[in-house]
Image (cartoon, rainbow, N blue to C red; front, side):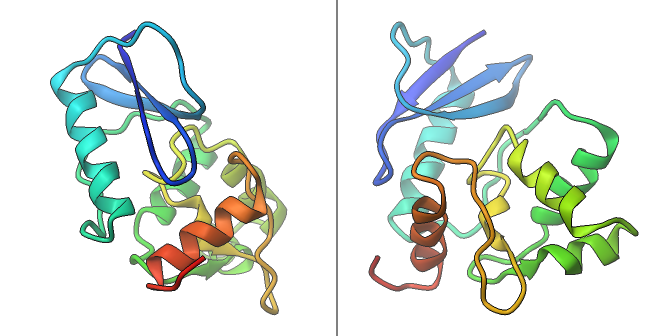
Length: 150
């Protein structure tokens, strides 16, 4: 499986490709990269995102998950840059519960690209985040999208 490690303000991120689709984004570096045109384009788009020049990723994604998780991830991809939905909002859209939505967020294999950081708790709570440094990473991404310094 081809993969590429790219630098970011959050540390190294490693992108994984399978059959012409991105299937995972992991925190940290992996030795022995194998660049492909898709991985190079994903690296360019991530750089543009972190520089504030890109608001929507245009990459072929194929995250592995249950039918429900894929429905949650599809909703995440409709949340506009710089905006958020609450876990409860997403749960109502999918006739589910907020905890189930939170579970799907935590299992998102393509964080940032599928913006699980845009789903927050009620009453101003950020909720959780499964990425490196947890809630601090989520806070960084939300501030980045709102044009704030973190």
